[in-house]
Length: 197
Image 1 (cartoon, helix red, strand yellow):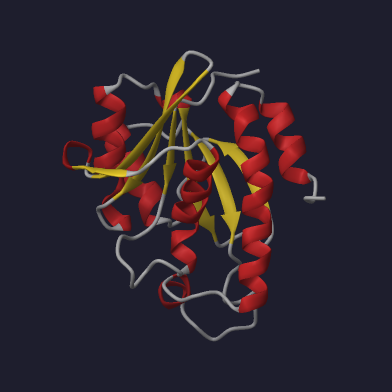
Image 2 (tube, rainbow, N blue to C red; image 1 turned 90 degrees about the vertical axis):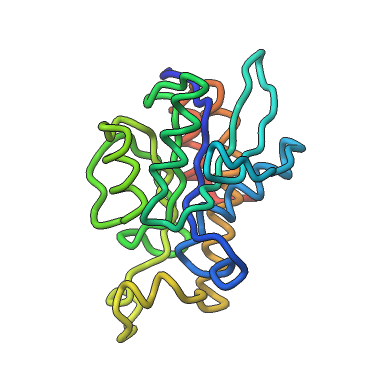
């Protein structure tokens, strides 16, 4: 068991131009969670992002999609977490991960930002990397035999097949999130590892 999650942050870039890009996998996940928990996103200027909330087990759980661009995601996370006094250990950040292939997803606590600008800014603003991360595999241009640079790759749509793999792992994550909200990391990891039947 671990501390229950009270804030789930999905990383991405705002606007229709970026909606379907690999870098927005975190936003995709939060849209699924908002649907599952019947929560509606509203733009909250004080928190520099779109916020949805719902009640579970007597606690209010917050979903946050920063409306800043990726490089400034920490501003929104810092504002909301400080206002609601949510400790770093009770935060889960969902983000695209170059080091995992499409369809792979892993839960991790702490660690470096590995060049991910959203994570870099969150760690800088919070002064800590001790939050939970749900790493959504999007592959790397090298591992997918593409000639694109990384910056170009993350800001483009995945292929149809890669998109299907990414969505499949998000559906597994969808099943695992309730366990994380209850502080049951072991059960969450089992659900993440099992293919959806």
